[in-house]
Amino acid sequence: MKTSLGIWAFGSMATRFVPVGYKPELANETTVDRVRRAVEGLGDLIDGYEFHYPQELSQENLDDVRGALDGHDIYAVATGLHLDPRFGRGGLVSPDDATRAEAVKRTLDAVDFAGELGAPFIIWPGIEGYNYPFQSPYGESWQWLIEGVGAAAERAARHGIKIFLEHKNSEPAMKILMRNVGMTLHVIHKLRAQGIDNVQVNMDWQHLLMNGESLAENAALLGREGLLGHQHANDGWGSFDDDNMVGTIRFMETLELAVELRRARYGENGERLGFDLYPYTEDAVAAVRRSVLQWRFIDAAASRIDDTALRAAQAEKDAVAAYELVYAALGG
Image (tube, rainbow, N blue to C red; front, side, top):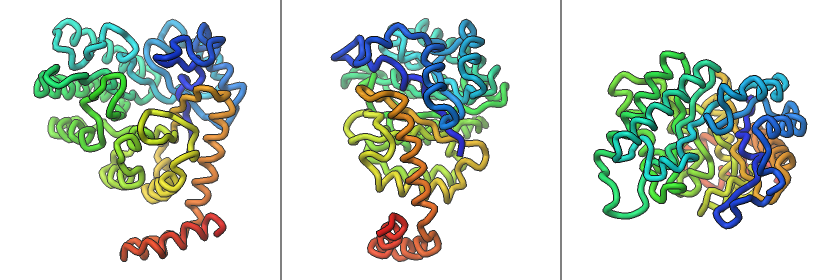
């Protein structure tokens, strides 16, 4: 399975408590600087990179970024509305007509840019939500969200690319509208009813963990529906979007996910394991490297589990027998 990496892992690691970031010496780096540092440090561990448009990648720096990529590809482009203060109260769901129109325009511009590159487009509607009860017109907001995503998907179809929807429950909007897998499927099925079928799911692992959603269960569900578009690999404690190194906290759940991704034959049609990491105080190269190597260990362990025997145990819901097989694969 090929890999990709969100270039934001190489930023200054800003937080609302330390706006300059835990690595202030990197605050003035350009995207080209970060790409060069990533490529030099990671080499062939990472096949391609992901960028927000237009903040990290645009026509203005495209040639320079391609040079720094040194043969690695631009795998995905992501929406950047959440990075612009104009959309603090929503972009695609802003109640202000002019603001909403501008958000749609910028989203379509981003899709066109991704289409020119032949890269999938990720919509993470982190700013599309609300912060208080009584603040938002829920029905209209959901209609605007589906219309905006639908417009992006129709534009993407002209370019022959896919849209990957990525849910999250909170931050920056305290209540993001599309905040779990079910709500994501609601958007996708509403669009399917309109004949729009190029929208799939980007599973960000920590976003699921924050909701108490099962990684493996949802991978199996989405795989059966043909909706496993992309993965954002990471880990965390489950209460915040930690974006920690893979396999450091939720090891067993990640191992179970590896089993289900294998069952779904994920990666055989070009799907990638994308890494979405935010190494606050760790060296970025070292954190990404550990994540890739730890994923390889986890995936190798998953390959050693006797899947026929595991399916038989699962058919009986025999947890004891299942864990005998899991621990045998781990050397127990």
